[in-house]
Image (cartoon, rainbow, N blue to C red; front, side):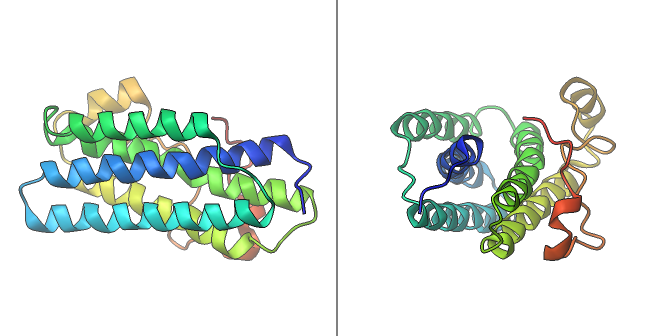
Length: 190
């Protein structure tokens, strides 16, 4: 079955490749950390991103959506550069930018649910919902690590993410149920 929804198809292809970038970036991020507990937490998040890539890939295969060679190359480069940069930009910035990135990733999965629903397809609600909630957990984790950092107010003012700014309207207290997926991320713009 082919999907007649170019925006959704592109979103799936981009998400698949962006998960590669995230995974590679977290390899570098974890390797740059001295604290074993922090390193282990980032490695768990890296594994989540590899899992998301596999899950998005399965959806793509179901609809015969080919992987974008351009996105794969682009995001491979981005992931490698970010991973390498974690070794030279200190401790705060990798956590801050990972949190900001994850903040935007939350809605990508919920918006995919919206697009699938527009086609009358609900078969992927659970897996997309779980990925969106997991991305929110990542955002919350990264914020918790840097919430007391002296640089946070300045970075939040410049980059619009932190204590009072988020790229999504998803809460974990409580997390929306799968059946409520249509109620979040309605105004998401990337």
